[in-house]
Every structure is written in C-alpha cells, then in structure tokens.
Image 1 (cartoon, helix red, strand yellow):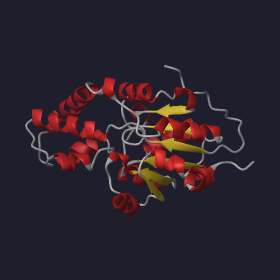
Image 2 (spheres, one colour):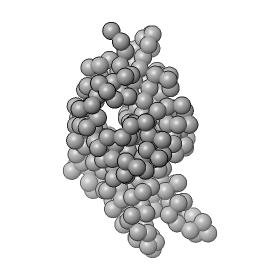
Image 3 (cartoon, rainbow, N blue to C red):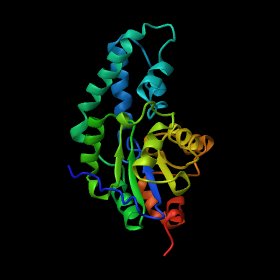
Image 4 (cartoon, one colour):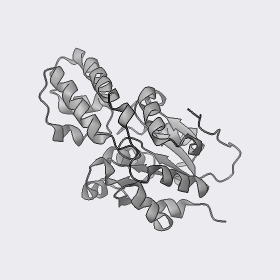
Length: 236
C-alpha cells in the first residue's frame, strides 16, 4: 500500500478537505449495522437494526452506551466491540467505494486541496477501506482511531486530521455522512458537507447543521465548482 504523501509544512495557504470514510467514501454503513446486530445478539441483547443504523459513525463505546441499558454488566462491552470487528472483517474483500468517491478525491487534489482521511475506525479496518478505495496517491494524510483519545461525536479525530494535514479550521471542510460528523466538525469551527450515501436523510443532516447535502460523492463532484469545496479552492 502506497503511503500518503508527506505534507509540505512550508506551504503558506493550505486548504483542504477532511473526509470521513465509512458511508462517505466506502459503502459500508449497512454492513456495520448487520455486524453490530449480530454482535449484540451473540451477547444476548435484542437491539433492532434501525436503532443501530442511526448511530453508525459514532464511536463504538458511545454506540454501545446508547443502545444498551445503563445498569448492564459493562464487562461484556469489549467483547461486543471485538465481535463487531470480527463480523465486519468478513466483508473486507467485497468492500466497494461509494459512487464517484475516487474521482472526487482526484478532483480535490487536482484543484490544489489537501486531502485527509479522518476515520474513527481502527488501523486494520482503515487499511481495508483504503485498499478498496485505491487512492493512496491522492492522500496527504490518514488518521485512525489510534490518533484520537475520544471518538465521534467528540472532535478529536478531526482535530488530529487538521494537524496531520497542517490545516487551520477556517481553511478546511469536513465531508461526512452522519450527524456525528457534523457535530464533531462544529466543535472545531469546521463546516460539514454531508452525503446521504450512509442512509441518513437530507432533512436530518441539514437539521444537524450540514452546510450542504448531496446524494453521494458523484453528486458532489458534479456540482464541485458551486459547492463549498469548490469555493475553498485557492484562487489563481
């Protein structure tokens, strides 16, 4: 796997895009939903899929806290998280990008924007998704769960992505697919463009504070010049 490009720390006016991965660049939100559903069932918890799906993109610890009773025996939480990871890994060979994902990354790079992947998934999951995306040559940096003390909706992963890309909040935009992306971005003063490719409605994403909503990366690419990403492109 080709390593991300080394950031040019001397660049005077770097602007860039922080991309969430699951549900945004990789069509995996429903695979995560099914994996969590099986993991909960294996641990004896009956959690409906629709409740799980609405929380995809939130960190594992927070997701489990939201879905299970507060008075549960928390000693089993780590095993549930590990089971989800193992069940999701079965799907790695078949992971596919969302429509237009790789092309959007290239358009950003060609326009002079820094591209950073900002995922709360672990290193091995992110590696599998990068393999499916096949766009490592377009990336300036990649951040994973190991780069953040707290996962979404905490802002840690986007803070790490800003640092990795040598970007200021006023010079960057988040692209994600969940309200947790919007909430995390907002805490750092970042605008968030959202995609409905993760299965969350445009209405909910706009109510969360997304500055623009598109169906998928291809739709955002088709409107690139008029989008918040296009307006971020350095002049000249």
